[in-house]
Length: 389
Image (cartoon, rainbow, N blue to C red; front, side, top):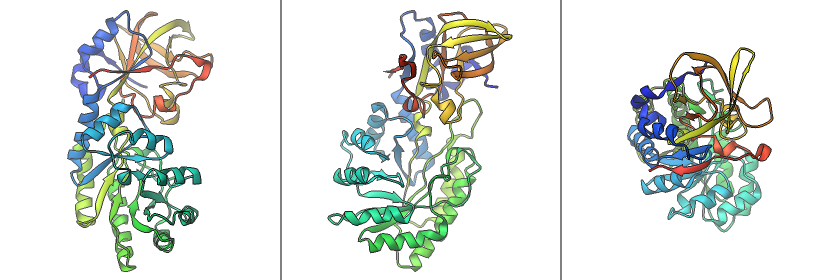
């Protein structure tokens, strides 16, 4: 059951919520606020970036745009000296409005259409990821430019992450050397290795094991005459939603030790975080537009739902902290979305004080894999972003 957060205790959770309690109280009290609305904080974006960079000082940060491509993320990360991971022509266009050098971007999608591949190369990208022979064969069309290829490997079936990103991508360890040979024969450059242990990974041991595998593979590649120049350790660092997670500096300590112990100096190391940077800077403000008593529960109908910001519940298996303005006895409640589909129910069995139509309910940490995966079902109003600092 998802707990709700009383506004009176939110002050101790400022960083997790993204905005402070006093500001949220203003939102609850404001009669003119148009909802649904997503509030985004530049300072929290910056704080998250700095915290991860401090926890992994040897690692260069390439923010992956999948969870949220709002300009605030691009601007802040670029301002702080970070870089980017891209997966499509659309993401390339968003990033290249900055002064970033396209040759430093990492195109991490292991499977690219010819059109997407051509566009990326034409825009100046040089670093790409492959995990199978068919993808390497696509390189033959690029005779005017030598590309740098990372081979993505998987080391086991993932059990420590909410979203298993080794299910769809990554070659077996014993195919890495073959792909490196294919890359060199194609006239391009084997540049390094990459892996991704999964999204919302709750156990840093998964990274440690993957780094150990990378160490073994690098030794094998050395013996075969290949020069491994870069290791990409992916992302997946955990965010606190309704369950506590280890602080990032503590979570990354074993990873940091493994990198120093297993990956020699001279090999560049990058990470491509998304959720850790994107989740907490965004807060969703909704309004109760309907209320009904059904089957022993109070049903509250909000102006945002599963087909919009709460799509992360479906696609990302995520629950978001519920922040309520009212106090009193908690009653068995349901929070449902505004569409005409009965599937559009976000929280069933939530215990909160009784609310009224017109009250606000706020949801923290709604920046990652929320608005980007929503739809225009029923052609209802989608929340707009407001930059709060």
